[in-house]
Length: 234
Image (cartoon, rainbow, N blue to C red; front, side, top):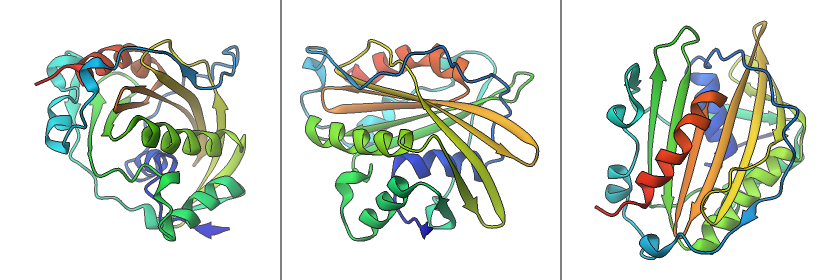
């Protein structure tokens, strides 16, 4: 067991779930979805050939008007990754060790980034979040690929945050045919007698990486529009 100080996607997602109360989605994992390796496609990158600043990325995030009625933006939470410990997944523990020694290629520690999270006022109090990053295509692909590979290498493990221990499960799912490269997975977690499922899908289009996380239905509903807006020049 090793304490993680990484800014990797894995722990970013988990701290959102653990420290903000966990969205109470009761949707079952889609066990019929076929596992798939990241897909590669050509094109779709003409509008993203230049790296974007964090300010420009921020303008390309989805907002309440893009999402529709019933969504409210959440205040940006302070990062608390140093409070999270991974138990029983050597690959994720290694990501934390690499980040601590400066090997940021295994993390999503890109300087050009923007993030927004929203709650949806439905009966399940669901949430959805979006992250945007801009860097070279190679760095984006290597960074997100290493994180997703580490997560799906452990079908089950535990995450401890303070006195809270969460039982985790990870399942690779079929990625949507969007952008130049795609990754997708389901995270199943159990804590305090409750079991929830969160979907996480990442799409690289040129020099932009789009990550949408949250209740599976909301991720599927908003991924395409997130990608379209991320490509739009301002």
